[in-house]
Image 1 (cartoon, one colour):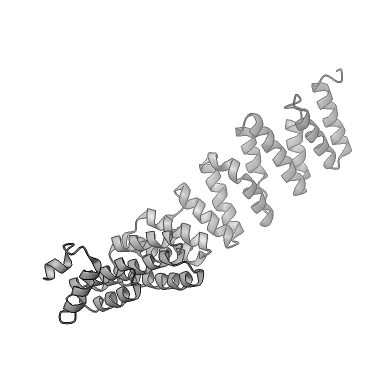
Image 2 (cartoon, rainbow, N blue to C red; image 1 turned 180 degrees about the vertical axis):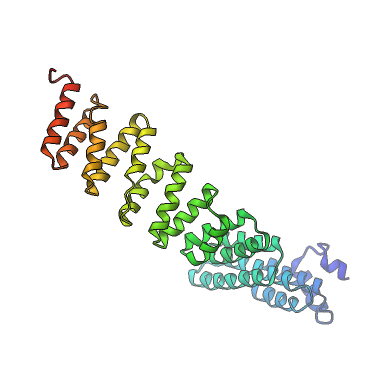
Length: 310
């Protein structure tokens, strides 16, 4: 009878429930309780299903199985509900159940299950908790990265920082995560140092983060003119033009007239065929406040353009 009740032999759910209710009055065997809970779940009788599943959790070595079953029941009921208030209440229970599952289990596969379910149910705190346990138990860099990414996205920087130290700055991803965390925690000096090293090591990131470099340098009162000049030397075409203009604006904004003059003098006649660029350079020369310098630049530009002889 136990085998029949535990199998799919009885396809009529109402009949199976009737038999199981009767049998479990006398025999509280875990397998029968599980089938009864699952049968209630199939009928949409969620309260009865949870009550039986909670009874199952009292048995030795069945607690995790019972919590998994309770989670499945609550998740099914959540999606069956229409009212937002009821859904919020069930979601709160789901959060508690997943936390309990992650807290009581040391099994990596179950912790991964909790992590995935936390993501799918939009419960990032649950996923973060599970990911931390996995990362600590395995030392897997992929899970360390997941912890940092989640923690940073949630603003949990105190959680992120120890794991960032584990990642180090050797990998591009590790350095970017450390930079983002330092930036969000307003450690601007350290953030600038990490980002400067990162751009030197990974030139492909320069276009994306050059404005961050300039903004941070202003915040910490550090001159990064040398970096801009080196970037200009390495760049070509439109990218070089854009960097020249950026460097001039940066120098003028920092009131570093000598740097501005140096850049203008070197590149004012580099692209005379580009009227917009050349006009920018002449106007920038005037913005230095040195009329003699501005006049000299204007004259050189005019000669290069063929507007003056000699």
